[in-house]
Length: 139
Image (cartoon, rainbow, N blue to C red; front, side, top):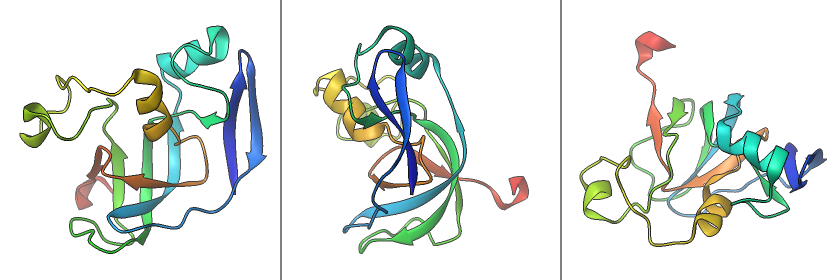
């Protein structure tokens, strides 16, 4: 599988990486389209700012569920999904209410980026991240 791996300022390489295997509560997504946002661009041109070398950048994408771990109840293989562009903790009052955009996460930004950024690759594993099923009419 191929991924765009960040090595440092102005150094992103297309490399072979292992195929992901979902653990309990995780899904594996085939990335159909990925966007490059301002954060990705800043890491490439001025980084490392928040990301650290050897991370796969990217957090804005459209994909398809291709494998499920145990205990994933809301998605099915074949579902098309879109990411939530923000990074949140998943456990604060805002996140529990489904409003992840104003959430303040306790982890450092670098740790959070290592956890969430990875969509500039063919497939990736998602564990509890912001992902939303696309309505069948939009497919």
